Length: 587
Image (spheres, helix red, strand yellow):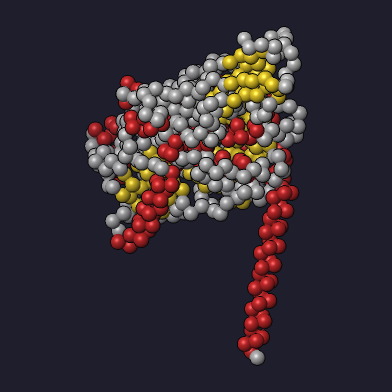
């Protein structure tokens, strides 16, 4: 009798749990439909070389009122990691949803340092069906703009953006058209630590965004050019501020000055972010827009950028949802840059593409939370290494494929940072402490394991600790699995990588010319290069050429006398020649 009653109670509890689970799931779906518009605007605010140096992530050294407000009205994500400690490979991951080392984008600067490497200029070549995620959104009717940095390790097809320029802005779209807009803020780039110090004059573009009649002073040039003089540069915090100097850097006046520049640059970037957010509010778009703020990898200081420690990979992210959904909360799930592309599709209720190696962390196709993130470090400018990393929520495993080679790479660009120069001076004089010496060891262990909670600077290698062998074996096995899945061979020489990308040829492949046919009054465009994106412009009788390329999706009609310009471009290939066609005859 007692057993029967217990059984009945158990069944009722089980059914109750089932009902509760279903109810919660239905409620979640209702919330998604209610609070994530089916075609939301999506705004990305992207800064450079950015560690968690801002108040929403626990560092109150300098005030960032605009980012702090964004965090108060949104969700902070402290566990976002780039796929590389440097920008171009990481941007390749963001743009495609694929790991850089799976598509030939892992070596920083594939089109330069050719005299040093002996390699030809080349681009990453993803599989033929891979498109930039912005192009996928354009196919769904989104107005896609980029202001203004690209740097993907490949030349973006002209189909990638409606606008990609200093003038690009959602304000140039058609009425009521949803948009995906990126604004890139370069003030926090490592070159902002160089001497002479001063803000970039070109950053005034954010105050005139969308105004195509305005001409910016000294626009263009490299990161280090077009700077104000230091005495003309706004000061956002006192120069005698007490800074928390990482233990791997010397605590002296040189480092403190660079730290002041770092935080001063962040404050200026925050001011620029505020301008864009104000424009969004002025346009009445705030509550129909999902806003992302994040950096393109970790911090700009020595032993941060380019390295595979958290200092080089971890960057803060804030997401503000319409109507302040989940305002003021924290989400601790692991997120990788390869997750951005599938998440964008999920947010507009599109299933992520099967080739994407990331997973959606938001939207209608949200995946289960990650167990691991992965990263790689290979050539930086003229210096090559081969390192892979895998991290769970607490531990980081690093595998060095060139253990006989030292950690430090004498990258000339980094050595323009005064603190880097100071480290090298102290090294020569034998004045570095044991922690600071680690980076300059002449060899490195084959394996490293760090407890990132207890050892956030990753200074105490636990790989030989008997108590940590189970964790080391787990993460090592996960790395082997990942390398196999994405077809990454870290030991592959770069010249062989190029040959593989070019399918044995010694010259970069070229996209074949598009084929234009006219039948029954309709134009059809095709290309024999598999995976090529096709685009066209219609030129009316007055001969005015539109600035934006239309993406070809299906046959269309044109009126007699209209001229047609057509291009084809597969990512990683040289674009086709421009083909011109007239509705009356081929030209």
